[in-house]
Structures are given as C-alpha cells and as structure tokens.
Length: 339
View 1 (tube, rainbow, N blue to C red):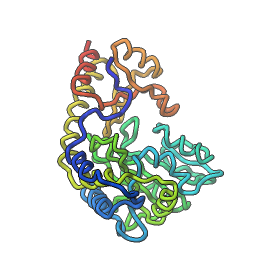
View 2: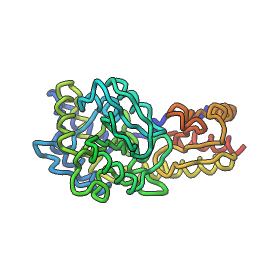
View 3: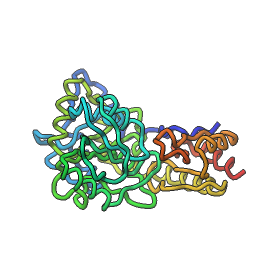
C-alpha cells in the first residue's frame, strides 16, 4: 500500500538542526516562553530574508514574534489564548484544515466558512486565512489578502494567516499577510503562523512561530507562559540554527518538487484532474465524482489518499494526495496510476 493520506515528512532531519539540538542538550532550567534572543533574532531575519516581512522590534518588551509548540497547538488554542471564549463566530476557509474548527469549538464559538470578506461582520471575532492552503494548495493574491486586511481593520476583527507552506510555492510565489505590500507599514490586527515541520523536515521537533501585531502576540505570550506552553530549550536552539540556514530548505524543496512532478504527471495520465495545488505539499485531485468513489478507485490501485469531505462540504468531489512519501513510494504510486 502506498499511503499518501497524511502529510508527515519522511526524509531525515538535516544535520543543521540535529547538531544544534544535541549541542544544547544540557538544559536543566525551564525554557523561556518568549523565546531566546537568538531564536527571535533568527526568526526576524528569516521572515525578512525569505518572506519580505519586517517585524517591529522582535527583541522589545512587546514581542512581535514568539515560538510555539508546533503550529497545530497554536491553531487549536488561538481563540482561547486571545480570550475569545463564550460567543461569536470564527471565519475559516470554505475548504480548510479541520483544526481551525476544532479551535473554535474548544472556545465555545461557532464557525462560518467563506473565502471572501462577508458583507456582515456581526458576531465575527476572528478570521483564519490559509495560504498556501491545506488541502488544496490555493494561494491568495495580494488583492485578496488586502481585502481581508481592510475588512478586519474596519470591523476590529483580528485576521490570522496560517502560512506553514510559505516556502513551497511551485507555480506562484506565496505572499505573507504581513508583507508591506499587503499590510502596509504596521501589523495592527494581523498575525501569521509559520512552521519548521515541512520546510526543515522537523515535524517531530514541534517548532512553530507566531508573529505580527505586538499587542496580539503579547496577549498570546502572557497566557502561554502561565499554561506552561514552552518550546524546549534544545528545540529553540535547533530552530535558531534552522532559520539562519537556507541551504537545507532548498535541498528539501527540490526533493518535493521532483516528487510533485512525477506524481502529477501520473495523476493526469490516469484521467484525473488537478485543481489549485500551485503551492504546498499536496495535489488536490478530482474525477468529478464523489470523493469516496475516487478513494475506492485509488484503493483498488493500492494507493491511500485523504477524502476531500474531511475538509468541508466544498471538498466533496476531491481527494488530497500528499507528496510526503519516499521517492520509492511516489514512484510506485505513479507506476500504478499509469497502469
């Protein structure tokens, strides 16, 4: 069986991370929830170098970037950490990673699915964007991002972008919500989430970042430190080393790019169609039929994919195929698809 259903990295974690982790292994004291100065400096440098984002004083008393225990726990807990419990609505994409809804439910909030700013802001307390998107790899344009920024600021609603696949643009170059062409000269009301899981093959390290509006980042940090949501010191050292090194990111990107090309050609040869998928680590595949019928077809070939209905009703005619498998497994899937 070729399992392309889960987006978990399979390649070795680069030595730049594992060496830094081992070197910081003597860690008898509690780590800082704020993040070490070395980590915050490296994060700010990475954001500017790779994404064109300039943070407001990352080492200041009002932090503009902090580490998180991976990105998933931050996504699930953000409404709670921001004090949004007890009523209201969280806007999430039409087709979306399930954890956005989990976080809303955990905080006692409802969910509204939409891909454009709604005309009515009544009751909306938070907006989640996801670009590049999981599962479909859709990338929001500058115009779309600016529309959300204007809407959020007009209505006083925080807008948060999950940008965990930002370094994996294929057909387009993803733009961060915090980029000056989108956000302007400051990040008021805006947050962005990033992760080392995919770009640095470090999902097991649980290494993520939250950056943006210092007032919102501070609110999250102050709650996190009392909850003990602390990134271990050795992991912070590994993060700092990884964020300062682009070579390992480009090497892993090349691996994923080769797998993507091979699998995409085979999917098309089998008569299926790929939509969006211009960035990220997934192919969003349809045969214009119920997703479970497509799942059955793939299972008959010995291939496991994720049904699109897991990500919302709008995904009911698609399946998600992950590129996070070894070269041998991707080649096996391609051979089976070609018949």
